[in-house]
Image 1 (tube, rainbow over the protein chains, first blue to last red):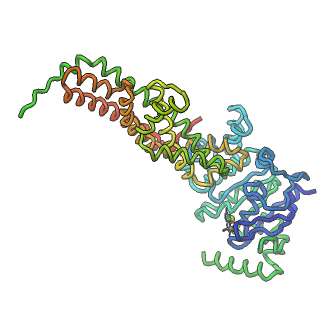
Image 2: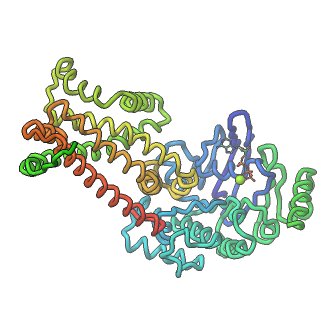
Image 3: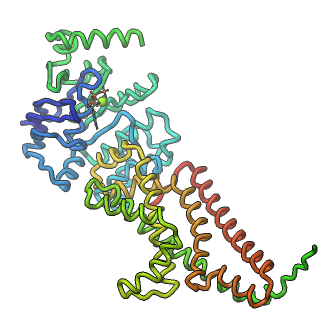
Length: 248
Length: 226
Ligand SMILES: Nc1ncnc2c1ncn2[C@@H]1O[C@H](COP(=O)(O)OP(=O)(O)OP(=O)(O)O)[C@@H](O)[C@H]1O
Ligand SMILES: [Mg+2]
């Protein structure tokens, strides 16, 4: 029984076939790390799952039900799938708590007090209760990303998508964000995580998939894919990556 | 040659000038308010991916941006009654002309402001389930409007000066009143100097207020509009 199913997913931008018939089943509680070279379509895959990008063909199934293309349906689906971006995408004209309340107020039509209570709880969960009144411009990158996570969690999503959540952060701020994601993992949340933090993927993911040529090129447990990859391209990717992280 | 300045005849007619100023502000204010509302609508149509919406909007915007305001004014005041049987008072003709003309201008300002907001803001809004309209109203426009304030100001000032054209269709604006007074008192120098001074004072006061607002917004760094 899978919470999310992807079947025959294709997406092209102009001449570029980014996804070429990708299949994926996600069981509840699974934490899937997605690896792949730059431009291999990792972001596109995530964005197709909540229809921020319209797939050209293929189906996405949520809780056993195929997602249609009507805007009203997509709006429902996006509330059930939380998304966290590399660049945070916080709303700069709203405070931290304003950011977290926004979906509850505007989309869910919560009364103000109720939205505020929920938002305070979510900010506390990511360790930012004391920053509720701060504007994003006055927060560090790590704090911004934690607010963005709280904003997504406030909608009580069944599934979380993280697109390189720590790639835009200074190295010393990566830990606090990974710490929050780790907590969510420990709560048993279902998540798909695009990351270059191989160590984190190794310890937190239940499954690792490697994207190449618009499909899943290799997948398995973290140990299978990260330590004992069988495919040549996976090995090459990991090798270049380790080399890079040693230099860095 | 020494000219003997004498402002008393002008001051004696200050009631006329005041009425003229009120009329000028009426046209300017109406055109600004209608222009902003209509301009936003035009901008949204212009940004629509549907060409049957964006193309006509673009056409209206271009026509009103590229033709002289005086021609537009004459067209509404003189041509519309002949062609469509629509009679307009000078005020209506002026209000309609300058509203649409401002709308065309504001449409471009709105469009520029909206497209200047990063794609990530739309992403962030849509990812929590907002509709396109909600994202626009709650996330994109509040940020865009802040960036548009200088252009708005510029346009408002330009508009107030352009409304002097309404004197040509006998609408009793400030300039029209000044013209009348100068003919009555044979004191054109004094009259037009006072009129210019009034424009100067009103426009300067307006720019100062607008700059103050702009500064307040940029000091807090952010504004929360609900
Ligand atoms: N909106 C778009 N329009 C045109 N091309 C796009 C668009 N989005 C992505 N692409 C192209 O699709 C390909 C895959 O992009 P994608 O962002 O999914 O890759 P990625 O695996 O996330 O890469 P990275 O590791 O750099 O984030 C790239 O070649 C990219 O240039
Ligand atoms: Mg990417």
